Length: 217
Length: 194
Image (cartoon, rainbow over all chains, first blue to last red; front, side, top):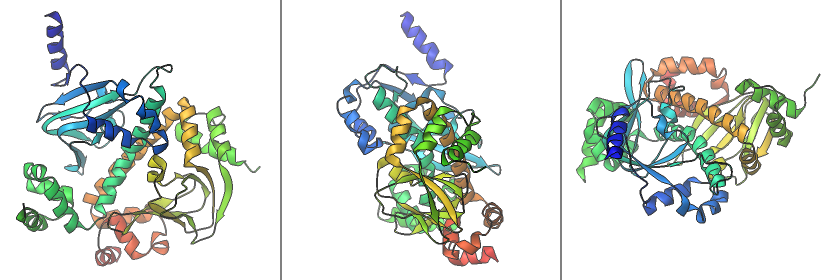
């Protein structure tokens, strides 16, 4: 009974964040983790994956996070749900990307010491994250694997923005129609102006692209 | 007095991290680099589709790197300048074929370390690894800003900023390449540049 009370307090102090007991990782999460590693390091995963300790984090729809240090030094994957990432520039709030099922999530973009553009996570749907802590003692059997994960995490959190920059280099019409088709729920949830801003197109282009994307839906 | 390759690289790392140049990890890291390699204007430092990848350190010289896009086109990514560590990230992270290229615009001197050796070094030097995280955090902020500017900044204003940041860009890159940096068509870029 006392433990239950403590859990409730914990939930309240960290704003609807819930840390449950270790869940069994779905197989697709393991596949994503393995693919994150450099091919030369994947052998480390083969015999060790069963020893990985997962923690589950739940976010409620409508919450906003401008810092989430509980995910420092962790590898985190979206099990289900949607988190939108916004930044402030010239007094405007702009979306840069949306984390959806199977995406790796990096909290460095909202790290309290480094967050210079008021970057925030907006939970657009109830979201569940699976996470592993890469901080293990030097003598721990998973140490080498965790070092490999840490390095990839460090590189990938910067590279992910390069990926978004690259996406912006693609033909706007083709890209926008494809994105709306693949993320119709997110597209429907965003105000039109914000969606047009995110896709880097005018409101009138959005109108015709939406029509085209949803025509075959 | 001329400085050795190791000293030049260690000195740059000290500048980036605020640690002393004599920090043993910096000297060991610098010592691993091969070179110098010299490039004439117009020569590639690396090309797209290459199996072998390197983390380059540019001691002197300027150039530009381009990234391959999914649709088969390329996008101008940024300027390569003295003091920069630069590489094909896809190759570094997953050992894939390089998906970018770098062409030097002026006479260049650079050193290189294979991505495999780079990883081995990082794995065996925990202290060095912790700085890398900090450096990557800095790159993340730069890219965040670049993405937001690309999407939302007034293009004329962004062009003026870019010319100041990359002096001579219009001499070394084609208008099509510059247009790709701004995510606009060649004709729109022509209007902006006028």
